[in-house]
Length: 518
Image (cartoon, rainbow, N blue to C red; front, side, top):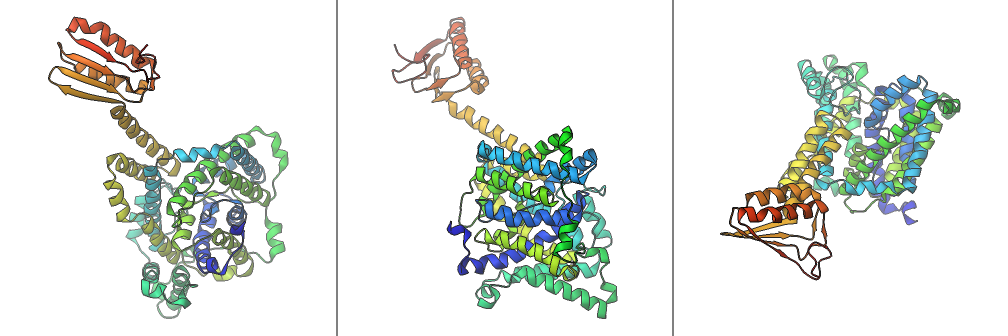
């Protein structure tokens, strides 16, 4: 229960971190809503609920939830099929109910099967995507919406062609702001500044944004050629009061419960959101400097509660999101209160001072996200993974490339498949050991030999020269698949024709009937 009380010591870390996450989350919530062809307020509602509600219910101390780019295509397709945002909200609520059921069914254990190399590859890929996707915004080119993580974009371009187009006509005012933001973020990481007590409550990201805003005013006054176009600024929907904010929120239309497509959409959202949340939580635990482990089944329930409330309030579906989480960790967050406070800040911002936030240039935010991306994909990560061997490095690299050129979920599945191939290859070598000494050959079967080793065993038998003496040692085996037994029996039957002598080495301790002594 002590996790639900904020101390002065944790506040020193969590308050500045919450400001950084707020600055990162604000354009992402708006951008994902825009990319989903949904009302802008729905993205903000999802961000608020993801911060406050999921932040309180989740067992994770450092993850941050909100609207996710991975669900954008699903939301667009669902809105096209249902043709009613109020009906879509019902699907979001049902998806939340399904996630709670999955939590009680302990489906969260799926997260334990994600290979470490794939999780590290996902983090590195997200870091590279952040850098590549923010370069156009840093150059003053904003055709693609903030938060898009897919290689193929809605504007007809892809990640790399977008950069090429942005480089053809950069806005030097935006470039200056982005470069200054990056330099300030790097400066704030210097040990000398970190030791200054007065700066511990002032995050570098906030300074970068304020300086960015100041530069835009400087351009207007003295350097009109560097002025930035209006579309290069954050645009918050106008909200007059809390009452008007609540009144503007769409409400779910439960008459859509009679339509079958609502249930199809709900199941799709539940499965994709749950998988993305589990992936993000596994990654968050890897980033957590205190190495805390999040209970995954509780996380599914927390995401379910969040989606139910988000749907009821007119918000987009929610998942745990690695971009905001990584920004949270790198900003120094220690407890769940950073995520909760960032949700409160989102609410306060759109009610109290939306006009001030509309002065923020995307270039300043791009600088912050580029630094966040670099921290996720440092060269040292590639070096340390390479030193662990190709069985780790290849799935790591394949995951990165696959995510870069597809999207998060497809890339993860490709990475897992690659990792599985290396697991099978390793299993082949471990299950069967071969020792050769002239015409004497020892084939030792280890503890468990499955049908997956059948091909290796057959090739081994085929490679044995005629006239050899073969010992097949299965005395320590505990399990042998019936396919393996038949392969050995076939070899024994055909051995006399090749003048091969075969001896089976059995033992009383083996639990396999094939190699157990009577």
